[in-house]
Image 1 (cartoon, one colour):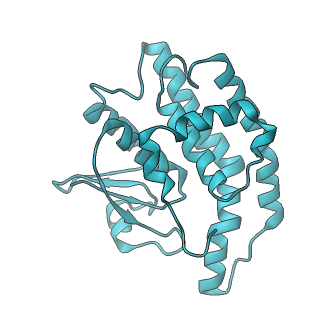
Image 2: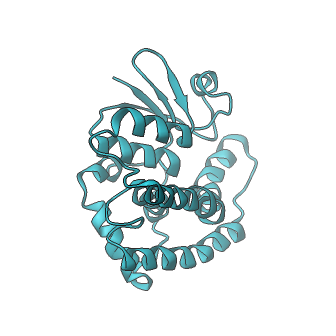
Length: 217
């Protein structure tokens, strides 16, 4: 069975886990910690970042972008997650990049780093206390992102068009990481909440619902 090296709250890893579930592919999980990189991940990916996917034959695919395309080419023939014509596929990729680059830089990374990762770094090394102002800024920037997500969901059947796609999974991966920490006021974003409820009701989302991190409520 293939193995996925991942960190529970890493949105890029969460997107890959959702995609694998949508493809109907089974995978074993190897939990990694960003504050204590394992030699196994460094050997497979010199960047030391998750996700890293290892096939049964030992071939390793590192990085969410490369792994996304690899899985779509090898598993997505009957259930593509980048569907449609060239223009439609471009829109899927545009939105995936929106969440993986812009949303991550402005919201996910500062919130996760300051609320979760920095806590463990401080506890193990005595250095790097959380920057709460940086986290508050990230949560403030979350609001316009959820407004944009809501506008897409209101105008289309799914975020990128008529069909569920990798764009929805990317958005769900980032949003679910913040939602895990209880930092989303859903009453202020009802359209985004309706979309999120649809995603959470899918069987593929069950792979995330049981996630826990010791010491993080």
